Length: 331
Image 1 (cartoon, helix red, strand yellow):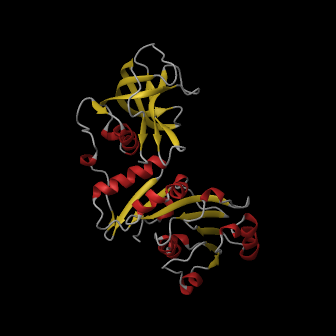
Image 2 (image 1 turned 135 degrees about the vertical axis):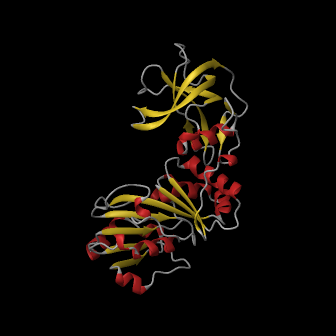
Image 3 (image 1 turned 90 degrees about the vertical axis):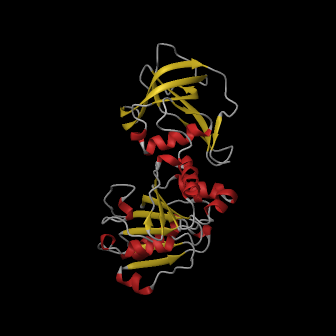
């Protein structure tokens, strides 16, 4: 496990000071590197503040927490072997026993994260998912629902053991994960440290062509890449077929032409689209399919509550539904 910045991994996804009864959850499948991650974190000076750390372990993998480390860092470890035993009342019993300043939970990747509940006295400060890149394809194919639940609320997702996996495959993994959780920070690591996954050459379209034509899944890939690398597209024109949506809170003259995307299975769909300024006064009903040509901007937009991609339409024309109306990241 590679070292992070001076503030450590727990500062990367969310700039917050740790407060009393903060809970940090790390999840992932067996032997993905969860224990190594927590062992590294606990040992760092920035994490060794006053008071007791409670470490709840829900499965024991190849890496075990050493007694010396636990003693030096004033960490108390409790192991839960059964999913039904990890209840809010059980956690409050540990609260009464140890009076911890902070809580770390190493969650079992085979347990259904939808059932995970914290006591009211504790607050989830950050959730991290660790993935063994060498086994990701197997889990994504065979246990996609369990994996998706791990990923949804994570602020930081780390792929380790990326050695001997080609960059094209890693980019596919990145898109698979970003389709499920668009906001998370993704890190890829091999034995030499963090891997830069930002090359334009790996995109399935030419970012220097005007307009950038986005057909099928390429729209979804562009949507995710534009969120992470808006500078690649600002000032350029794009063209694609999208479905019209009119969010109630949007200012007059704006709509969202986008696509439904399948991120996990047919029952797990999300709409991918950015705010778009009308080309003229024509207002198309919701779910109308349109062909959009627009200039890409990156600016403050009230409904985003921050800067983000905003499209300024050059033309919007009604069209028929495409043969592939759903962007399929799951398939």
